[in-house]
Length: 177
Image (cartoon, rainbow, N blue to C red; front, side, top):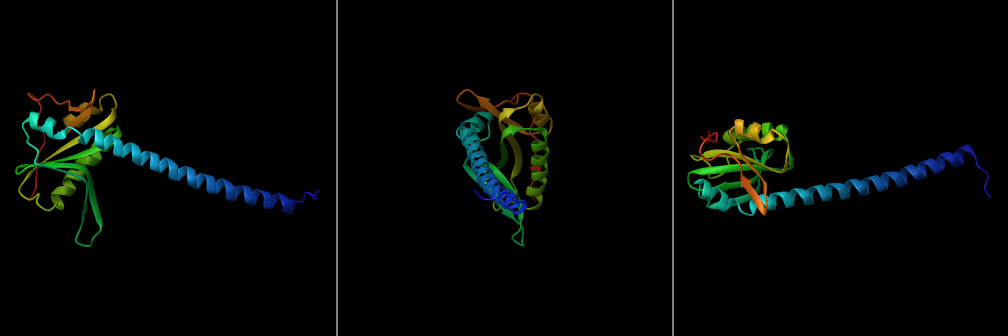
């Protein structure tokens, strides 16, 4: 049996640290993959029936785009839209979260300003509306979003539904130049 020395203990700790670091990297990758999978699942749940939901709201949908990324003239990232639905008059940018929080709503309102400043191709002249969706929507978060003028989508049985009152809710409009 080898003699236990200070140097042996240091080597043992170094080897253990390397193993722990490797396990942590793998675990982090798996957690990131799981988060991405859950995010994609949430987006698909929201996207599944959007055409009918907004058609019933009186906004016919002609096209849906997922994960639209806008870059500036220097090809630097400006914003991403999870789901963009549009027709000849309106475009609705929808942000989807597993757990929707007020911070996400504030970020999405800021995104609308960026869309005005750096509009997507074909968006000029359209009226821009916004929506947020969450598989879990905390208490009061839906009212917070509605007060900001955003459509709110959350689970309702098989898919999601727009929870705003169609008779009283007026979505905020952002004009695109």
